[in-house]
Image (cartoon, rainbow, N blue to C red):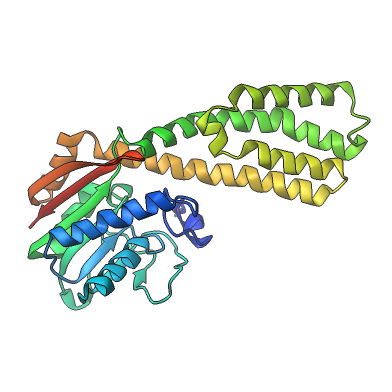
Amino acid sequence: MKTTKNPWSDYWQKGAKASFLDDKARLQAYQMRKFWFERMDENELKQPIVDVGTGNGIVVQWLTEYSQEKGKKLDVLGIDSAELKPFNDTLKLHAETPYETFKLPSNKKVGTFVSHFGLEYGDMEAGLKNLHLQLKRGGSVIALVHSTDSNIYKNSKALFEFIPSVLKQLKKSVTPLQEALLKHGSSNLPKPALQEQHNLNQFARKYEQYGAFQAMNFVPATKHALQAAAHGNSDESHRVLSGYINAITEHKARLVSLLKATEQLGDENETKALFEDAGFKNLTIQTVAFPETGVVGSCVQCGK
């Protein structure tokens, strides 16, 4: 039986700290950390706490920091269906652990489930029913989930729709130009290669102000590969270009999973129905937005 690899496994195993946050996104990281600190302040959470879709454990890290700053002892565990590479070995993280079938040893029950863009990436119908089963009476769920009005969703959709144009350009112009540079050098390019160079420059100029184009780092990647080819560095040129194409392919798979995850949630009424059909009560759904970065998703809170 063929199994499909989780598209997030490679991402986490390359050492990423969080999804939708890069090393430069300090403001967003601060905002997200603050969001979880506020949820902790608002709620007297039962323990243990389990983070669903934990990735490499950024929320577990934040909750650990919260417990240290507030002098509260928290028992926090992270689970994820993907393969992981935690950035902090002291965090309790369980890789390849789908929440649809998760349970603690010895039939121990969970006090609180939290999730930061995690629940919607699994089978929510089956998964939420299992979370309800594993939750203590009086326990709660706090989840930040995607929404179609969030900048994350809008930017991801734009990027997904733009990827075919980039892949077409790589095949149509960049690869032939690369081979011509390796064969003839930059000063003796034949007319077809010069035309592809012109087409490539036109493509870059056409989309230079487009956010999705900028996000894909097309110019730096292709420039590196073609400069290496112009200097006769075949191995380096092919390594850079193939690596870039592989990165796009992997990113596309993650974007597909994000779009499907958001679609699974549906609108607010459909999201509410998913949780209530699983048995959860006292459900609230609130838009999460920050002044500097706009809407990031929705916060779902409910109990048993």
